[in-house]
Image (spheres, helix red, strand yellow):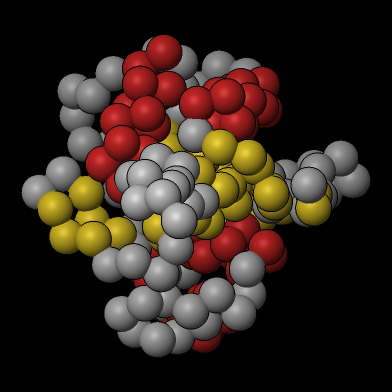
Length: 176
């Protein structure tokens, strides 16, 4: 067996947008993820949420994507930053509106603590807008540090921000 053999890993990514044609931006982000990161295996429904952090902004649409990738964690982060920039994301203020935001929620069951990357996402247990779409496609996924399922994390979160299904008659979970 070759030592250079590549192994694919599952990555759960949270997509968010609150500018422009939000549905088109989510679709563009999913297409870029497939092109630059790896095969998309599942996508959640689209959910609408008031802005977290600075609630004076327009509402966000959020979606979770399960992809498989050959990229190592920091390579994955670099590809994500490139996709965000290509789609018009600039980083000036922490809680600003954005055409696209892509967060790494999980990288397989790995725990990563680098200056530029923490996985699992450190705020995941406190964000319903991430937990609800994640629960839809991975309810029994185990958080590698808390050892709790997505369902358990959602039931225990203190976050009470409203998260609503966006156009439920049009968008639903897709097994790819």
